[in-house]
Image 1 (cartoon, one colour):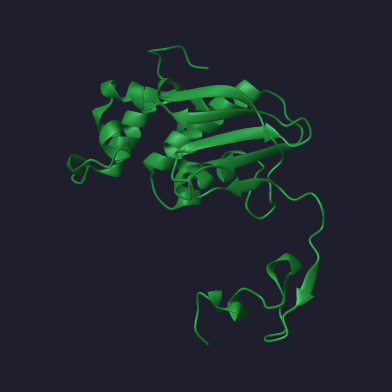
Image 2 (cartoon, rainbow, N blue to C red):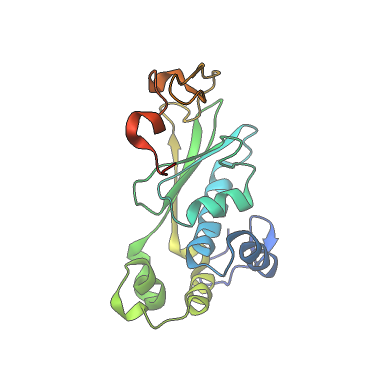
Length: 195
């Protein structure tokens, strides 16, 4: 980990320049959330150490999942990343076999020295006129010093290990998990689209 007061030079083994390029390619733009997430992933992974069966859980749907997918083998597609819509800027990396993990979060108590980061994170009105690139630079200056991390033990893995039985919906004919009932969610009135 970067010593207190020293500017970080890497995130998850990437130089800061390479991290920033990868972030813009993956996320679409320079993002304070992905930048902060990079330091959180790095801190959690360092705390956890070698985890041959790495899984991740993030506690927000905004930005943080992209940092995890960009820097780890955990993605939504392979199921090793679980996204909880709790609205908390926190994540846990854990070994799905041992259930040992490390939870990292943005430590608000450390923001007094970083007013741009505080204004961004706390969604203060004075942040409206600030360019995202300025907030990213402030996060880069704070680096690991903005992150708290601690070891945790998962109660259970968050990814279903067993194959999920499926069934055909009698209304549309599309297959869906049996646990959802006879009708698929769309035909049961939860569709997010109109035909």
